[in-house]
Image 1 (cartoon, rainbow, N blue to C red):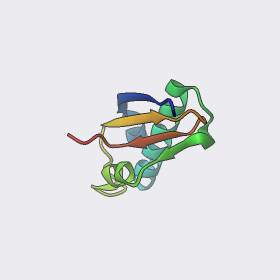
Image 2: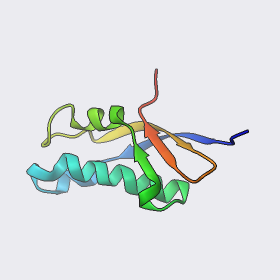
Image 3: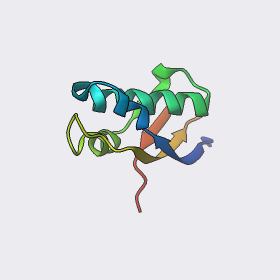
Length: 88
């Protein structure tokens, strides 16, 4: 059986507000990847971000990403980590 580690985290994206307006959403996506990598102890290459998370960050455009986002993180036994928006 495959063992999975599952967490729900609130990731702050406030640091993206200090960057140029034309790069905020893409920097917010990098922040998500770095935060998950740090908390799940995996390299950046093993973090896979779901399309729903991408759409949630880019919903208001490149200039106004959310200040924080709630994500569900699943770490599979092979070391791959999947990031998605939790269903309410």
